[in-house]
Image 1 (tube, rainbow, N blue to C red):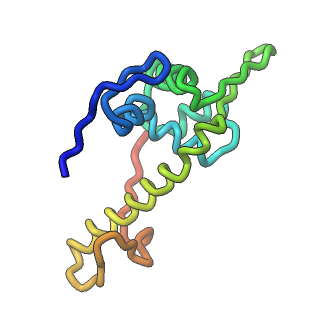
Image 2: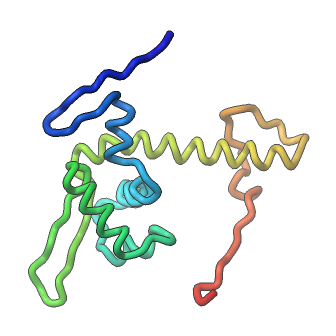
Length: 147
């Protein structure tokens, strides 16, 4: 069956299919990582979020948060104090995305199991499953902060 996507419009946003619309909101390199960290914590300060999303620049984090806030996914709360404090959290709409994030996390564990099983032929891996001891089987690498 062929699936065709005609141009649609919701509010002021034009899109061809619902998957494209979802990717317009949560797609890219950084937004899923930001959302995953926000999903794991009820409220997160900007500095903590920057440290948690490994590799993101301050500019990209600010841009991602602004876009997610504009799209109604993230709430930004500014405390008028010195120094200023800014906290971020998921809105109800953002929280509705948590099951998708958790499914992606579980799929990542399944894929890690697949990768490990490829190296160990006798692992008993089946597609879509997570090896019981996957955390012990994956290699952890430490990185020098100054490197």
